[in-house]
Length: 304
Image (cartoon, rainbow, N blue to C red; front, side, top):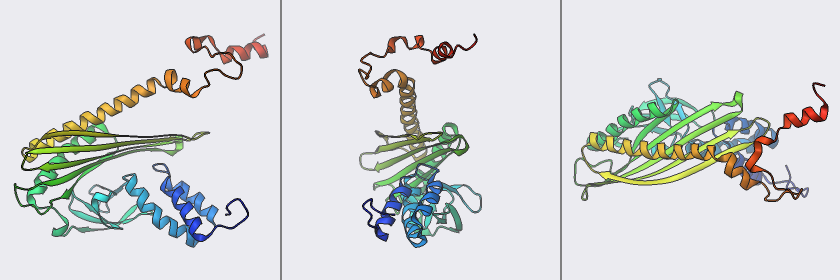
């Protein structure tokens, strides 16, 4: 591997390039990219160093979900549940999973320690939201998983102080045999303000899709959302927050679908020259009048 001028790249430069390719692999395709990167590098030590750096970041960025060893559910690889580089908290089952990032598997499982879990007061809010969010995700995403984490104030024993939660949703559709993969990721940060009895909601939705049959077409889009609700009982808060999340995600999905419907009428027109090299405007108003089949039949005298 050289820099194009005949000079060999250093191991550090090779590792940085490899990390970039691995980190930017589309959802569900990092192992395919890794196979090619490994072959191109031809240096096992450099590849292993790059993989050790890139896989954890890729898994967290894409909210990869892994089945727990005891089959009690799935754990999402996210910074909100990260205890250290290889250990992640599953707040729903109160367990800690040891993760092999490169193999994307959970290798061990242990009960979470008391200091790794929120207080009973915070857990009431966290678990109530987890129940309502799970209902929504099971309805909206055929292969979706979700989790709710305490992000601040986990030791609060009762009313009188602020705390924070994060609701994470991850859904993926893998179909490499049909040359397409896609993912939906959303993170909702919730700040509970006790004095004002107010819950501030900030969300980010990310959608990615990759179609690669005889080509390479990718969609990578995201949107930020803001909302709020009144601080109530854990159950009432959970219902209100889940409904707000449902509203914003449904609205964004509808906007994407509308964009696809208008794709041929608007987006493709913008990609085409206003006046092509033929100096003749393309008849967008009457595209049905054009028929490649008819033209070929005439040229080749098919059927005569």
